[in-house]
Figure 1 (tube, helix red, strand yellow):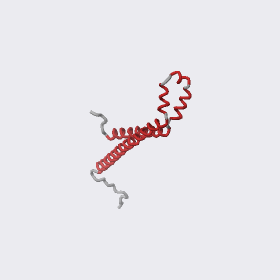
Figure 2 (cartoon, one colour):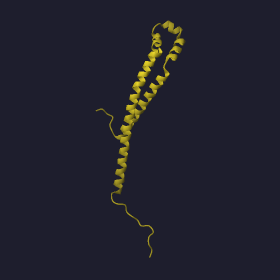
Figure 3 (cartoon, helix red, strand yellow):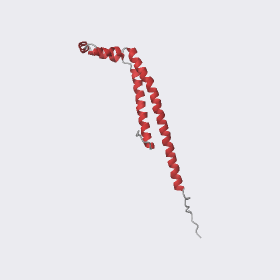
Figure 4 (tube, rainbow, N blue to C red):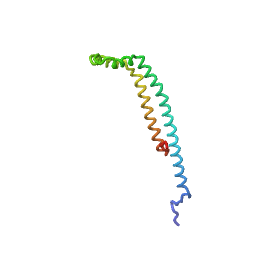
Length: 130
């Protein structure tokens, strides 16, 4: 008498539906988490952008950049004669540290807003206002 080495077992009924529903639930949870964190990054980016802009504007006035820049609109013939000196004065008085901080904060806002809108679109929410 031969005994089979392997017996074939049938999967329980409804197993496929349970697996698919579990995968869909995990996918929905992942999408919700991504949407939540991307909204948080947008908020953090905006919160960091406002002080960076304020710092940049304050440094523009403290460095004398605004006064040097206003010379461009004063006398055209003098500006043409001394344009190189004026350009170097503008470059020297430009506050690069606060400018870079402002640009980095702007970059973070733009990228996080893109991440938010992409995850919102993938989540199935409509971006239409109507």
